[in-house]
Amino acid sequence: MSGRTTPSAAVPAAWSNWAGNQRTSGTALRPSTVAEVVDAVRATRAAGRRLKPVGSGHSFTSIARADDQWLDLTALAGPVRVDPAHRLVTVPAGMSLRALNDLLAAHGLALANLGDIDVQTVAGAISTGTHGTGAGYGCLSTFVEALTLVTGTGELLTCSATVEPEVFAAARVGLGALGVIVEITLRCVDAFVLRAEERPASLTATLADLATLVGENDHFEFYWFPYTDRVQVKLNNRVPADDRPLPRFRGWLDDEFLANSVFGGACRLGRAAPALVPTIQAISARALTARTYTARSDRVFCTPRRVRFEEMEYALPRAALPEALAGLRRVIEGLPFKVLFPVEVRFTAPDDIWLSHGYRRESAYIAIHQYVGAPSEPYFRAFEQVATELGGRPHWGKRHYRNAESLAPAYPRFADFLAVRDRLDPDRIFANSYTRRVLGP
Image 1: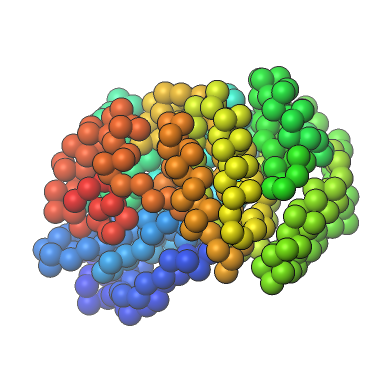
Image 2: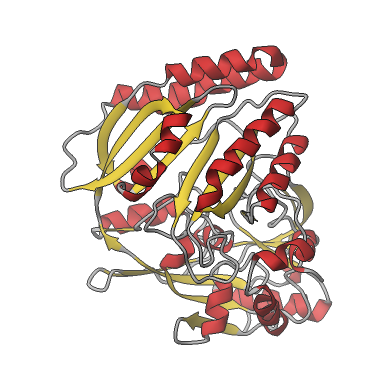
């Protein structure tokens, strides 16, 4: 098999993730066919080099930072197959979630759940365990019916629940450590409309009513504003008709002006004058008013994020959420600096994917953020200690400091994942500093 993507086609390039906290320089390969991916892997192995597939750079960890060469799959061509009768879609790995959502909508289909960002590539989203919220839904990887990857030995391997099932259980959240995913088949649902209800509330009342909020809504999450008892509750439920669209001006006001322009200004002010942060948080919490509207599902799930930040997120046993939030409040109160961003809390169903954060348990996710340029590491490390003691599992694409020794007890099938890695990438051509830390050499 031959193609254009060989070591001689590699071009010097610089790479940075969205947040700007991960950077590298080296050589980039941009294959346009699966054959070129196979050639690149085989040439890399023969030369004893390293190759790291990258997506859109929306991970905050170094999971996609290449030590040597990286593989940009955004130009990877491939057949796009939509099967409305069976609600299946097959797409190339480098397609963005935004493009996928538009493709599905054109065929009367949708993904059953999404996170709040849609710029990730499909392969990048599933490889890190990207998730939304909803007690009946696991991470996006649970929608995968089959995937094809190029292993570290240059083999083109397709897996599903019935074909190479152990590879399938590992590769749906594979951290980019098992191979280069080139094609993904996803199970979809009929297109649907969501009724979005957003309203301010108190944290105390929200936690007291948590079982009802989680159990009686299709999708529930909330944002807590540090230094206050205020939260913004978000409830998304399926309805039969899109009969209450958000006025264009209100959408711009809330999602562009207030959530991005004004909030960005508030973060810059808080970074320059930390003593004002508690007041800014209190004003922000009070400034958010209630709104209810309907829209196409992905347009409710996904929102623009233009204010840059760094993030840590932990999946915890759902019953541990109140204790985790109490610990987080103590952490924030004891910091020598102020926290500029609200805290996001979401919920997911159990799944059976070996390195999924939600493996075999109902989860509550706590995501903490800090504005770019503001101090973050003491905040993140202190919360990580709280979360770890409660059985937390870190999101693979969000900041954390855990290593293989620490992570192995948190994942019952960790050793099985490593065995699949040994088989698919015996020479570790897909390894980088991140995989060596979280998986071992």
